[in-house]
Amino acid sequence: MKISNHGRLPLVVIIVALLLVCLGAGAFTFAKIGKKGHAKAKKVEDVYPWKLQEFVVNLADVSEPHYLKVNITLEMEGKPPKGEEGGGNPEEAKARDAIIMVLSTKTYASLISDRGKMHLKEELKSTLNSVLKEGKVANIYFTDFAMQ
Image (cartoon, rainbow, N blue to C red; front, side, top):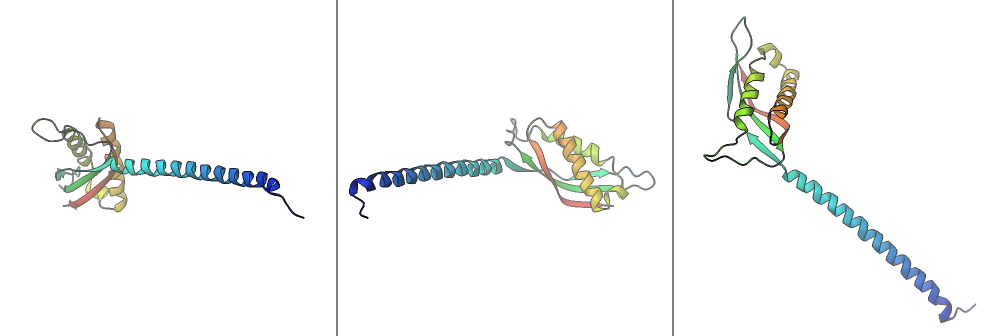
């Protein structure tokens, strides 16, 4: 059975059309994945560290005086706030005040365990996110933590 050139033409057109549809779908899928990857990369750029100066506070123990010395770095989401004239972050006073108020309510016994420190991080995160107008606290890192 011999197929003439005229008989092959519809078959060739169908194959070319299928290839074009597959290429179009592949290009569309690649473009969508590329946009998602770009969005994720942009989000990572919108996270920045905010290192605060050292905190030294008296703990709430009444039977015996204890103090806490801690360095905290906040991982913030959003764009870093612009400093005011004279430098500095305008939100820093609010953040420091909120942290001192939370830390000074804690006792030595409540902070000695890892669980206590994790609870403190969650409380600080919640308090800071309710006080700060610019940015959002994503994580809190204790870079030094000493009690006496």
